[in-house]
Picture 1 (tube, rainbow, N blue to C red):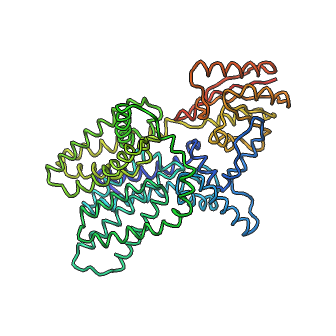
Picture 2 (cartoon, rainbow, N blue to C red):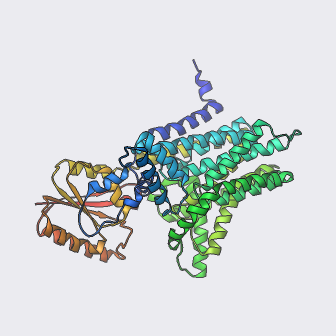
Picture 3 (spheres, rainbow, N blue to C red):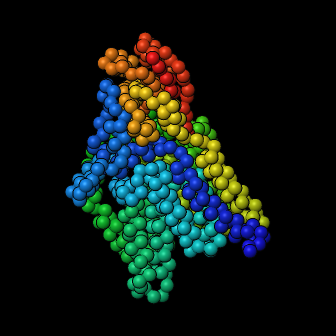
Length: 548
């Protein structure tokens, strides 16, 4: 029997923290509905993106869209080949490389398109990244530091969210950790007397090249991290620069086929305008600074809570993080931990600086896009800096600060997954299913993420039609639809964030709502109204039920 004193020892607490990190991922794989981008990932994964058509101004059976969220019927090898071909064609219209979607496609064939199944692959990636964090911390410092690094990464609220998100950002951390650990192992082997190509060294070389290819084929901005790894070579192993350069070149050559065939097409279809906003000099400089500060505050403290908090709080939090980080760096420099401090800063600050410089030169604002997710590769370096600092503190101080960090992360993470529900479409499905009569759903948005979430969560066996229209055109299209067909019930689903052609003012939105209500009340009585909300603006809808 394990004694309580051993369980609550410093080692026991670190192991418990890592166990909690893994448990949180297992328990909450399916606790939230797919959000907007996740359902788009599913549409791409099934290989049926090319079959999707933007809704017109006429009602369509919702089941037509539901069929696109699962693999097409395949009765022969030729059918499978046709599906894969359509899958690859769909990817060329995306701005992201194919590896994440390819992995999800294979996973979909094994386990289906349930929420838990879809997210489980990223969950496995994240558990692998936690294990890699232990390996890096152990190699650079000691086993205890490895456990601290693994616990901090596992409980970090931002990484927990992306571990449970069917997008490419969670796996990106895994590839960053794998390439970092493999490179550090190669450098350690280079520093020994025997420079022969042993099996173990060949293994690490293969993992390093494979990790770089995996990262580049998952997200193009992983290139910033590759530049940081090149700087790490110059920092730790300059004598073997040419040998390292060969491995970098090999990874580039292995990605060349996709870059030649797929990337050129993707670049033609990419929407770069959404990252550009014409601003004056000082406003532009302020936006770049704010993006940088917010990214650090979100990644290291707030996590997905940022979607429910004022932007100013993210800025203030980021500023405090920067101050704390500068203090840690100064303290480590004073304690003569300059080489490891350089490792942490290269992996954390250099990719951030490169992204910021590219934004400034290119006149873009990519760094802060999506609450900083495009720069998620800096998170391990930031957490290694914290790990390094905690291990250099006097034992008594470390025994206080380390539990505070872990408990803080655990509290933020548990609060996020437990207190912030996202089950809007389950509520809508329950409302419709309580009286399964032919129903027209009038949606004030043509955005495919809204339409496909309806198709995923509403029962396909119910007699449901959907009219998805731009907000300003919904009243007119609804008039035409009701004149051509009779529906016992109409549900007006008003998105608070319709994305495309959203009302520019509150007054315009109110005028549109009054026009839609006027059309419906000519033939129906309004029975119930309720607001459905989740964790972000894209999850917020007002549901109004009209019955004859």
